[in-house]
Image 1 (cartoon, helix red, strand yellow):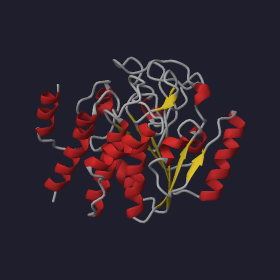
Image 2: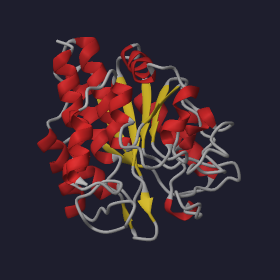
Image 3: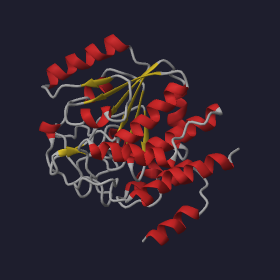
Image 4: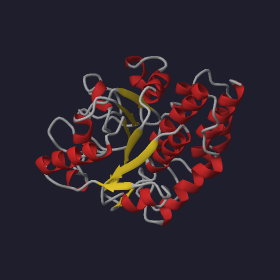
Length: 293
């Protein structure tokens, strides 16, 4: 398996979208025709048009394992650190279930704990956050979003509502946002809620929460890294984390209780990929950026 993945990694890629959608084992690539061909660039343009303060929302609780997963927070921090280098102020947002995981890699950057509460209370809290911080942009990466029946559901279709703060209300109150997801049930997938049902391997009851722009990827962390690579190309700055840094973030997450999302096991994998296979994306992005000069 490793040899075949190494072969995949050495193949040339013509775009960042190709890189973040490679090795797709969940069928998310089927949505690609329904997005702009350069959807990462479109999202990056949205980000660069909104300087100021960005709220980055992440954290996906794996109910059957009783822990937050390793996909999401590393990508969120990669985006956050890149935007800080570009002059943005960053605030991370998560809930009680993923708080320690996000804090373990976010350094001194503020992390807001969004309470698990009713829709009314959640809407009030969202209003308080937006009033206090006046964000220019919201970015969600691997964050469960409300589905059509008013619940939150995992990739198995199980109701995980009691483990999710209703951060969707932040997006209801803000006109500029980017969503990053890999399974159809994450915030932002509401943009494609009409085409996701019936798509093989994707949920029949997808997220309905929309974002201004959407990035799909084989793994949400990869979508975050792809956005960072594109931002670097557009600003002429070196923003990508190293392969070693990407692994270190995953390792730290596991040390504070995170699990690999597919198996629910406390190991330094991401979405069924061991560290070597997971590193494929960052390696390819570095090669792609270098080739672009």
